[in-house]
Image (cartoon, rainbow, N blue to C red; front, side, top):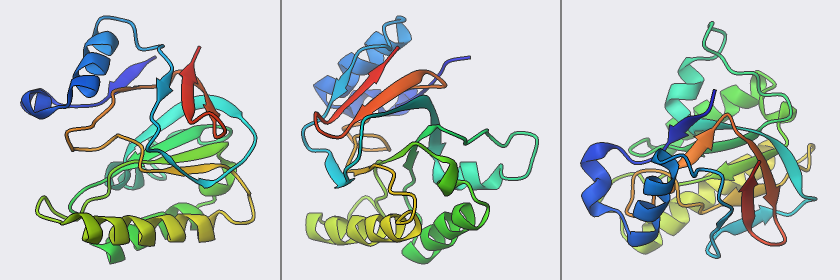
Length: 180
């Protein structure tokens, strides 16, 4: 089943135009449009990979590990976001995913917003994201899977709606996430 990960009703008034148009397209059944976001940072390049798109909020996903709600991670493209979590908690959650063997099963990883708080200035946010990105690159260095950062998912004004469970292709050379 395809479900949507994206903005909630109370955040629609604050979305940028592109995110709002993407949201409208998704809820009207047109979720299969290719997403090109030039500000995406390719943290580790790789071949174009394909697989079902899974993910969402990191805290929620970690809380589902080893339960009946745990996802099949094998060959999937994982997208993650979380806000309001200090670095030590994010480190713990990512490390738990690694210890469970989940990160080694993936085809690719897409990282969205991991802002600590709303008032975080740009430089502070860049440094915070860099810490997270370096952690993910370290935990996945043996797998060599492609990793993207700065993808517009999370809780900000740029919050692209993604079709969770759809089949997707992640092309690091073109910065495109496409769906079939």
